Length: 199
Image 1: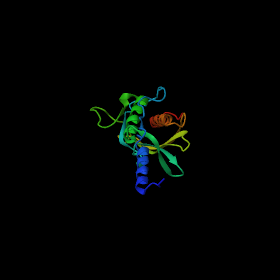
Image 2: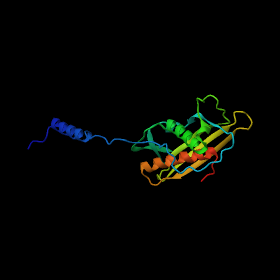
Image 3: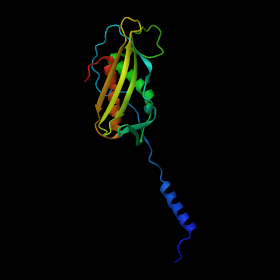
Image 4: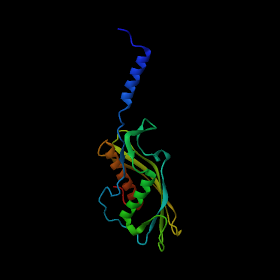
């Protein structure tokens, strides 16, 4: 039997490669952070007359401005969770949900964002910055670090700068469980901003 010619070998390898690459890639699973509160909302004591304005945008680190669900790798690395994506950019989801959660805690008529309706008198302005928002390398916890400033626009009280380092245990290492933990971490942040004691 004659050995295969180089041309025949090239054609065979090409067909094999085509066979390997013709398989359709698995579709990405898209995740959203649900609007509904992840816990039962209890009564919150609201100081009389306080009306809040969430000043935008909520600042996020640049590494979160992408659709990948990220996991830490090593001491400073990040890697995307293959096949899993955010359905909505976090720079849009975070302020929307933060306002929703603050309204759930403080009252829908107590929390506003721009543009303000006529006749609304703001007594507290809050500006929020996320410093970190990610799962731990073992996929068992989501950590959210944030800083926010509360200002009395009437100038009757000095501005206050607050910080929080929030850790939320995930029910497991799967992507959907990590998304649930991200949502709960945002709710805990809203509690801190509203002045609810840490649970």
